[in-house]
Amino acid sequence: MLSTFYASPFAPLVGGVMIGLAASLLWLVSGRVAGISGITGGLVDPRCTDRPWRLSFVLGLLGGGFVMSLLLPAAFGTTVVSMGIAVAAGALVGVGTTLANGCTSGHGVCGTATLSKRSIAATATFIGTGILSVYVFRHLMEVGA
Image 1 (cartoon, one colour):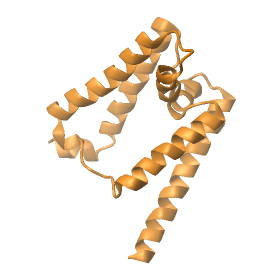
Image 2 (cartoon, one colour):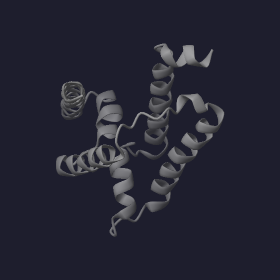
Image 3 (cartoon, helix red, strand yellow):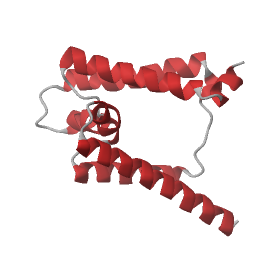
């Protein structure tokens, strides 16, 4: 039953709705945009004066993921081919979002919801670059194998 659900388009739809609801609640209740790079960046910024809500948000993400891993362990398969590649990719995303003065989740969820031209352009760039990267790396991995 659950494996059929994960293979259907409904699992991503449910996840997307939950992300949208969480981002909307954060925005409506506190007026803050749910951009994870900005939220976590503020935790390490010595000038930041509003760490409690940021820490609560991050702990909520981790706690929610932990609870879901207990309730639906089959949803958490391992897909990392190489931990080194995953760490390098994460570092590149962090550097890129810092240089661009934005973040993928803030633009992708909140920015596009408000029809911000800058966010739509950023999100299209993120998605396009991701598609190209996956295609190139999969092709190179097949050729090299």
